[in-house]
Length: 392
Image 1: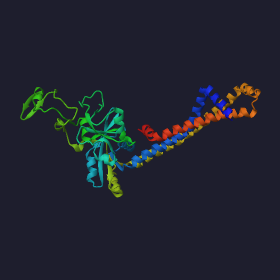
Image 2: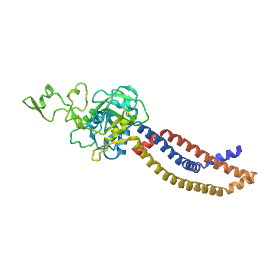
Image 3: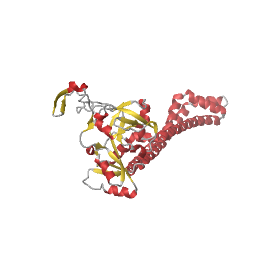
Image 4: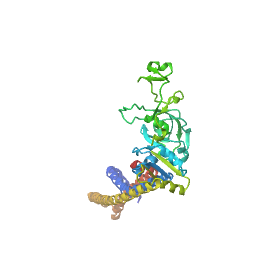
């Protein structure tokens, strides 16, 4: 048996390209159905768990899935904004606590999430370094953001402009990193968290400028009349909020009317949740309330139904691949007739040839199966990230 195994191995090494193709074919036949099942199960469980941790979501009427994915995974597809007063409406109901969220802007490809400090306690986030944001212009970053952008506490991140041609004069805002979250394995790792007011500054709903009473601003003043100062376009508009200029930042309009993407509503109990949902049943209303877990279950059911058809397709493809492999082995045996005849002439038993061929085929099947198992382990570990990247 030892000599047969040696000869079989040497044959595979000599025909390494053919052997590698056959091993990869076996691996794919075994891995694809298993890997798909693992991706759906592992990723689905991660999606379900985060949704169950988020009781209710309030947002603009429209796609409940878009609203849920934006609030839970900070997707680029943002729902229509609602007024900040909707967050106050939830609190004033006395039925739930509210965490407002505004997810519209990005920095280096990472979502900037405007929210309150209550978000960190709600998600039970832990800080690897630093602290929570305390004033406008400060931000907290996820572990993946810190690693990929090589950032630490005290560094700065700059918001990305939404358009190259910014006719509104809204400048990118430079924000100071005051905290870094520990890795949690979810969407928070790839987000930049800041105060709602900071996102409103990015949007241009607030701005700060130099003190017009100072000597530095003298050259920018056109005229003074009745206690009012009229300045020209050379007045410096700040794109970084510091301790020196923070008091010069002011908002235009009512904060209650400022935009947010959604509100995470946290009811005190099940009865409060039912009563709160009942307050958003009006047909002509512009705001809806959804239960994140229900939305995610509907999504997972859709994925599961699609999975069945994919598995059927993979099964048919797998059968075809197996038949092709059988044909390859038969043709290979046919081409090796002279080699087998030579082995018999030098004294090899007839059963020895069959054992040699079986070992060659068995080695390919075993190596292909081992490779499929390794790929399945990788998918089991990274399944949640894979399913999230496919959905978002």
